[in-house]
Length: 239
Image 1 (cartoon, rainbow, N blue to C red):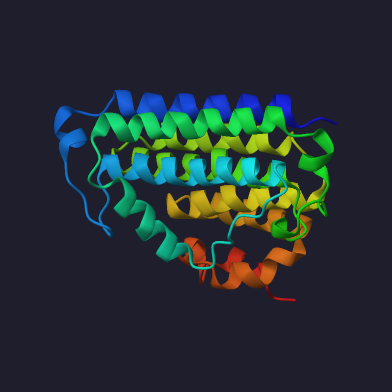
Image 2 (spheres, helix red, strand yellow):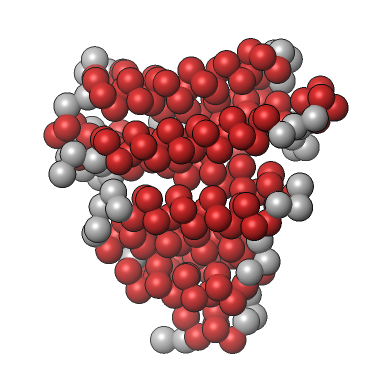
């Protein structure tokens, strides 16, 4: 199956959600100056732009037979992205995010289907098909941040609907237990952060059954801290 049509549809939906978030911001929210550890709205959009553009650049490089550097320290990279965009105008940052979105779609359309699907095609992918990295940087990552931003604005229902819709869409890209497990795991993380702990435990259980390789990481994942000590959570690790 060629994953591109459905993935492009999800990328477009994600970009629409980003644009809808931007459209509701007040002038004061757009003008607020943030810090590296206290993002403003502009910092958030710059963060999403930076990762989308990096993913687009990586696809272009791989298409040319080149390898881009691996990101070894996510926190350091996030700080670097913040510094790249913090002094740019609001219009420049929004345009950069739009360019990153367009770059992901153009990159998908330009690559051979086998190059996107073959887990062993690119050494830098470490056994993961390239399309999954595109889905992560272009859909999951932005939507998690946007959902968190909606939560802070008191829009919990909208945030939850966004994440559940994304989870359903991502699961349609690949029916393998490993992939669906990752998708369910990310939804569980969101629900835990949103305070829906009982539902988060239920989804987490699904994820760990589908993809047992996530068990060890889940024990230390700070996104799931709110679940610690809950009977249902503890039962997941009883065996």
